[in-house]
Image (cartoon, rainbow, N blue to C red; front, side, top):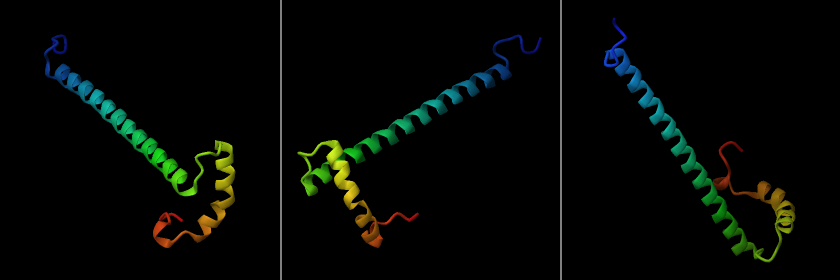
Length: 88
């Protein structure tokens, strides 16, 4: 009657596998949440800098987008090398 006993080595291993799988899910979820929070924080800080340096706090989102579109090509073409993405 191997396997009918709940304390067999196989059931212990299966229990440990389940625990490790659950731990892995939790770690992946935690990592994803941390990355999401980091991205949200970066976006907030970038928006604050745009408002500060471009004086756009009074503009609507649509107006801000229009302004950014006007200057996006210029900035992309004239970005100093040290600020370029390695993939550019």
